[in-house]
Amino acid sequence: MKAWKHMVLLGTFLALAVAGVNPLQAQVRIKDLTYLQGIESQQLIGYGLVIGLNGTGDSKRTEFTTQSVVNMLQRFGVNVPRDRMKIRNVAAVMVTAELPPYSRIGDRLPVTVSSLGDAKSLEGGVLLLTPLANAEGKVVATAQGPLSVGGFSVETTGGGGVRQNYTLVGRIPQGAIIQAENNSPFQLSDTLRFSLKEKDVTTAIRIVQAINQRFGDSLAFVTQLHSVAVRIPPQFQDPAARYAFLSEIEQIEVKPDVRARVVINERTGTVVVGGNVKVLPAAISHGNLSVEIQSEPIVSQPAPFSQGKTVVVPNTNATVYQDEGKVVTIGSATTVQEVAQALNLLGLTPRDIVAVLQALKEAGSLQADLIVM
Picture (tube, rainbow, N blue to C red):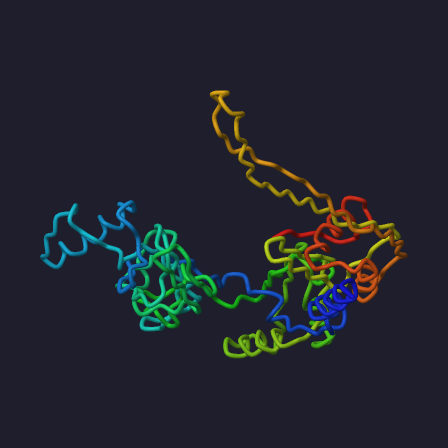
């Protein structure tokens, strides 16, 4: 009965991971597969303070938080001795955001706020005004507002507590206001160049074929393994028409080619198998070995008038439990369903699959990239 539950669990697990997903049949827009060269976003970063925490902020051991609070209060004309400050309601954080191209002054951006010190939770906190700078050190936005952490953390005086989700990283939707425009010099030239987000020459060739088929001319060609160039035809030379031509290219759908991958997360036992994964013939044996060690204290009394001492001696017993091993031979599996069926024969739990997939990769049977998160 237990093995059957494992088989049902595994079959459902893999089915949810890959149900109905076949990258060879999916049609994806060129807009979602590439980005136009010359239009880039900027990464922003800043250092700030989160206040209003319910005793879950940084402790006195985090000296830079104390120094930051002192500096902030001095700007408002408040002088407080550093050794008398208690800042359990304050946490030092790093604030990050992404500035899209052609942003205008006054536009808003979402920001991510992450704890920098030893705070226990950012739940209920409010980020104070924080400047955000780009890689060149220029301040282009400011962030401020209440955090949303999507969870909670409650601790008791005895050391216990309840926690849901991760509460040391939060977001502020539309929490940053742009102060400087991101207008990098760019013009639509006679040739548009697209870079693939997932570098693959097969996908690049399919994009070229789809564009040339749409316009009935050899306008597109592969320049590198990850880049496609498109010449603007004469009927679209007008500046306004060039943007219409670009929009039409972005809406063309192609079939991307994806490398075979198996992604596993050992911390959570999550396994995701891609649609192109193949398994060569192999024999798999898997058995669980458990060792239980029990220790009981035994009081040893000395003989009468022996001048000995009463001592406590631990009595240790070790018991080994070993499940009956099962050897399963699998043939060549060419689809995700066949891979799931082959692993189901062992009645494995999702965490056991991680070890089996790693062993199959080392044996050369798993024909896919094994990515461990």
